[in-house]
Image (cartoon, rainbow, N blue to C red; front, side, top):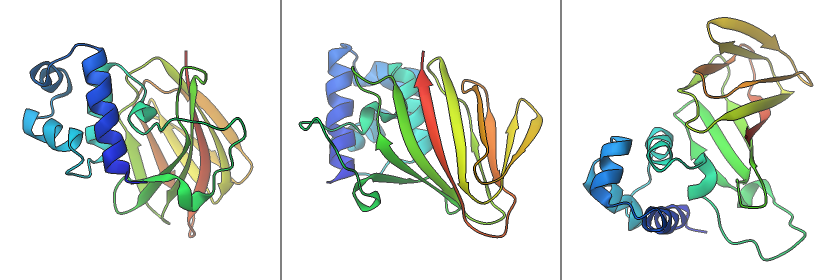
Length: 182
């Protein structure tokens, strides 16, 4: 699977379905027309922030750009088959299930290196985030409040606000992250 090709094809299809010009999407997302063109043609590997901005401009869920057609009613997904987004040098996001017409949630596994953090600007669509820690220690900062979680702990919150994931442990932090769209 060439993820850049999938992103590009979905971006072009969704933009055209919304009857949106490249110039208009550029205005709404803050991404240059040249960069949008490169993404649509699968010529570049967009950053997670670029994808969030594009999705915000299109008013679509983040994973809408990663979707591939599902043909089977039973699907097994192995970690080496999922799309990976390196959020930065310290965090990785694995997309297992994206939002579809039949599914109003996205399911990810996130990994953050020891002592590192990742900040999310919040999601463009009205949504809730559900997290369950698999391994390690997670400190969530939401609306300037801190919440400490260990393995098997869970938290949920309004995902439209800025929030930060911090690995406070000495090992790799792994957690399941579900974004539910209302």
